[in-house]
Amino acid sequence: MKKAPTIGSALAILLALGGIYAWSEFVPALKAAGGYSAAQAQWVFGTTITSFALTMTAAGRLLYRWGPRRVTALGGVLFGAGYLISAFTLDRFWGLLAGMGLIAGAGIGFGYVAPLAMVMAWFPGRKGLAGGIAVAGFGGGAILMAEIASIALHHAVPLPRIIGSLGLVYGLVILAASRGLHRPDGAAPAAPPDLHPLRLWRESYLRRLFLGMFCGTFAGLLLVGNLKPIGLAGGITEAAATLAISAFAIGNAAGRIVWGWLSDRFGRGVVPASLAFLSVVSGSLAATPRHDGLFVALALFGGFGFGACFSIYASLTAARYGAEHVGGLYPLVFLSYGIAGITGPALGGWLFDWTGRYFLTLCLAAAVAAAGAGGLLLTRRTEG
Image (cartoon, rainbow, N blue to C red; front, side, top):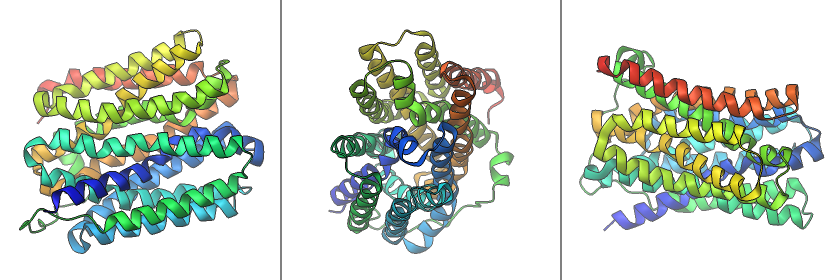
């Protein structure tokens, strides 16, 4: 029986790749060691997310030709190489941008799509719940990486050594786990669908998924990319700021499962609900006085709302077009995540550099999520 090895391998791979959401743990150290501004640090994070999203389209095409193991193995090689390059070029912005941003981001893109598609193929009747459980590993990956980085930084381990070691170990884990990915017994790979981006704009259903995912990930990435600096700037203790990263990751993992289950039951109606939830949390972070416990709790809720983006849209794509086409069509919707990645975190960092506060950053997150919820509700009657 190949179901259990596939699920276990998918969770291990996505747990490793999800460490990117611990990025804000590294931001204060990067500022201190390399003299980076908040905007520069978030440009690196945003480039990682954009590279991740863009390469998923190529990974979706290769999945039909190479199979899940070879595509994921390529992701492991690129992920590890990107971290190692970053370790050797940490004091040079363009080296860090190329290594952590472009190359490691491409590794995430190639490593992400096959585990998700295989798990959903094994559970055709529960696509939302199965996909949510799989990508919960990705959401929870930040907990492990944040703890490792926090302990290492506390013991004065040089930042280049931390990043290089993480890249080497995580890359090997992805390579090893890729061997456990299998298609369901007797399932032949489906013919790849038309992956031209114009297909997205010809179909109102995909356009609305694209809009919803952009608004949700814009707000969520703006939070996660700046989370620790937001806490520190507001007077939160170092320990609480690090705990908030783990809380966000726990909420992110739980949200992927719960929202995935809700999408199985209620369909696309959960999309505006998830965006409204994320808007309320972002606004609460902007309006609420800083307190360690409250900040950690709001980070947990923020992660829960953000987690919806990575189970709802994959589930709805599979429900509409079939699980066999998730690897080909979902990357088109996922391009919105790349656009959000290159704009949201960097804009949030720039607003802080300009004002010296994160108030406008959080207001922007709330406004974009609210606009997405309102827009989707207004256009729901015309949705195809």
